[in-house]
Image (tube, rainbow, N blue to C red; front, side, top):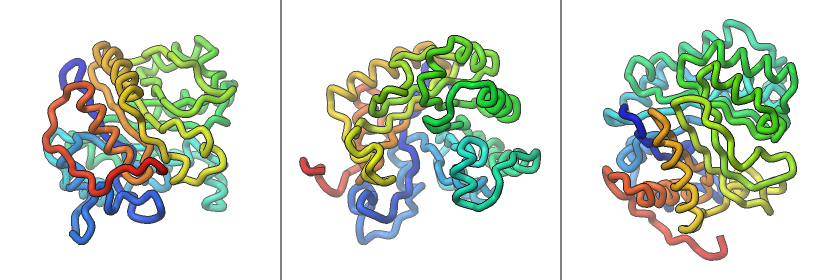
Length: 289
């Protein structure tokens, strides 16, 4: 990996059901395909989101590594027990008390990707309710201590973090990247520009569907296709940051009906990056979507 290397992909690759499905939009209809292998024909990275709901199983991680070509990198989202304890408790009925066994379990699941040289980074995404206080700083420091060796990227969403210069110092000392996000802006949102805190840069583009952000569901919230001008704006920011980084990841999370891979292709074109192969999207984008 050379300085300035940019990996572009999407947050997840499997969206088989619901209105926002990728079937018939990105994945061909009437043809049985291995979705991950098919996806890896066009993109050189993907963010694994299933690990947010349960720790990765080593056998599954081995399968992921085997099904993609050399040079492909995965980033892995941390288990919700580490970052969203209330969500974990609601989903499982268990208390979200972190143990060394939990940490070991998650690390064991990562090992096949590490051995294959295909783990690019680990994403710790926190909710907007994770505000800057003493307890939250302890949680952040603990994650850096236990997972910092994996190129940790931290997504913070509340402005109390960007309002405090000590946040950047904490991340810099832990060599953790501060994830740069694009999403609808609210009164609690992070500052527009946040400092670079490591030689890793990590972008997550969630879309700007402000109208549906709180009243929509997990699909309609992300019904947003970035325009050409918006892609140009985001590409300029990614390019400037990547020039100061050894490794950069750019992920689109606007996953409604394969908008994410469409915009990932747009980003690759804007940055004049080489394509292994250009996907053929199965259905046109309709104005009413």
